Amino acid sequence: MTRTIHRNFPQISDAESARSALLASGFPQASVQLTKHATLPPNVATDTVGNLLDALTPGGPAAAAAARHRAGAMLSVDVYDDDEHDKADTIMGGYGATEA
Picture 1: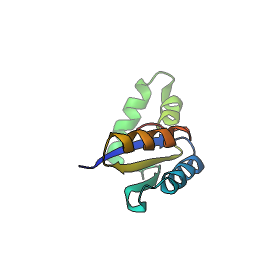
Picture 2 (picture 1 turned 45 degrees about the vertical axis):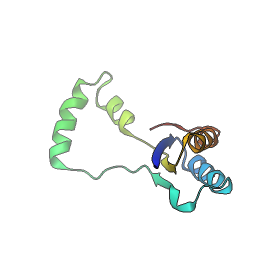
Picture 3 (picture 1 turned 30 degrees about the horizontal axis):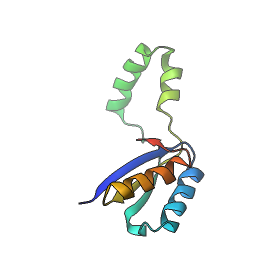
Picture 4 (picture 1 turned 90 degrees about the vertical axis):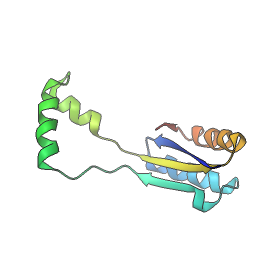
């Protein structure tokens, strides 16, 4: 049974390098997916609630905006057993991955 592990990378180039290393180590291309973090488009309802919560955030709206900003990317890998899980985790960890 397959499981999918997800890891975040602070830089897109790190995620791309980890993806290349996973493929070079034998993971099938279909089992490795890179997703770049993107800013969500504005929405009136969520903006209204967000503005209220931003005012309550320690540091105010500027601190809340900085916390929401996510650069980098997420890499997802389908693994079939514990050995593949450990192998993928080790490879991604070598490129600065953190748990998603």
